[in-house]
Image (cartoon, rainbow, N blue to C red):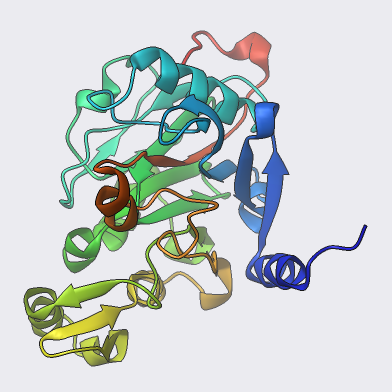
Length: 294
């Protein structure tokens, strides 16, 4: 059986960008940055299929305990983490669209998701860092020289506050990371094809960035499409990460309802939306992992 041309085109485009698909239990499908994995970092960007949540039926909702049953989310996470292999201690956070970066240490931290910040960094093997999105930009950072990594949630507010450069600075301060050694993966998000913003956002970017107008394509009076992928790529390169070591997934959460949750799209259709997870960590032999669980 031949593959549809649009599928072949998508796969080729993803491969050029440095990404590949990985399957898991019950139809779980995750996007992996190959170069980041080759440097020793397990990583994955989730999709919406293969779960047990009603968003609608069979959705892999990975966060939002106030909108979904806890047992659903934990089962979905078990399936998703299983696609990475190995054993993990998951560490997330309560995201607030700010610029806070938290360093995750070795002690078990079952209450990590109550900690308010928008980026997590660690050098501990066996710790899986994760950020939740449903249109915002997820960015994963790995430094093979020191073994440090970070997961960053960058919406338009976080991008304005330079959350990704702040994460790089925290990695340098805590672990001795050099930006030139970092490899970055920018995951699926609302892209320039679909993400319209108003005058408030446009003016805020113009006040902050000299080349802000290059990120916008005008649509109607006081509105424009914004390219947050490009904005975060530019910030990474400006911070010292080599352009060839920045990989951006060419997939939009808004225009791909077959693959992703989207806050903007799903809230209009269903009144709520599920959450995706983007994760990164260094594997350790299971015999050396003292604690487990999600």
